[in-house]
Length: 206
Length: 206
View 1 (spheres, rainbow over the protein chains, first blue to last red):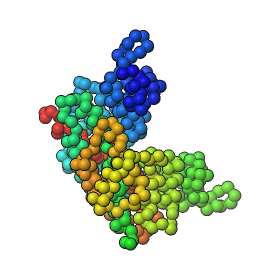
View 2 (cartoon, one colour):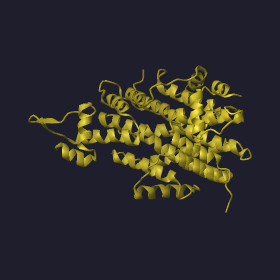
View 3 (cartoon, rainbow over the protein chains, first blue to last red):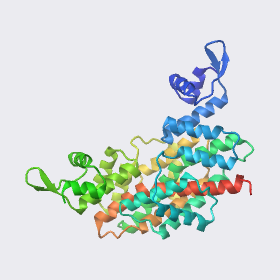
View 4 (cartoon, rainbow over the protein chains, first blue to last red):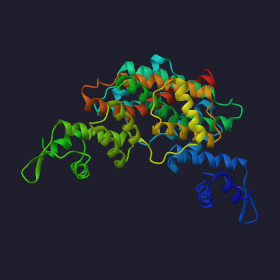
């Protein structure tokens, strides 16, 4: 298809597509003459993924580039790609207190989770706990345990629902989509559940 | 204390504090003469809350203002404040497909959750599911059910851990903190759990 049809089918304006092509986020089409190129279904999928990460995932183009690089790395083991995609989805400056990192490592060990000790998600978690401490809210072990159990149920189901590793590009793409776009689903459900629990604890019965 | 000490104790620069005062995010101190004012512990708490929402929660100052307005509304029922704080924490333009909203309403009904039918969190959830559909990922009922159960466990524990409604400002503030800053904790744990599940499903045993 020509670029006009690619634009129509993905709802992405032609100038934006050209920008993604120049920036290398989208692979070039098949050249037909000096100024025209044909595009295929893989361009549609890639464009939809970029738009989803930008619009629904709220990622900057720089972050999107990192995620796509992880998706496109064919030499890596599949389970390592998840780590690379996670790392690309992360904020750039992660810091955490050493004592909180120790707490996170204990939790990982107690749960028997297989997690790379260099995983930035460790620091992400410790930093999130530090942010709560700084405003005087200590997320105690009992509550953290509820969070970890719930997260384990969701994370395990996420991975179980991924397509088999045989269609590798699709598995990797699904991994990124589920991590980035599944998060707002979980958070919205948590808000609804909080509202329900709050109505039950603090609400007046009518 | 004077503004210099307030700055030192909260790590917020004096010009930033003055900016928050001008913008009405922070209540004025007690005037001492024409150009000086004294500040109290409540200013420290409020400043820490603002910084946490901006830095760890990633909220714009306009969004912070909305959240603080919800926190400060003394006339509302406590369980309604949670809804108002949630609404203030949300993106501005929420849209979702009608069929997805119907799906969300069925889920809320099936779970017996008490949720205001006007709650923007309904639209937030439906929009998050739509974003997944747009990239060709259907989050099926089985997986959605795992998410909802996990979210219910976390949301219920969140509310159970709030201080009693008697110290109202503290309860409201804790609600906002837990909603905004508990989210990254849950998401980081989910990433770690995904890594573990991915290593178990796709990893080679060494």
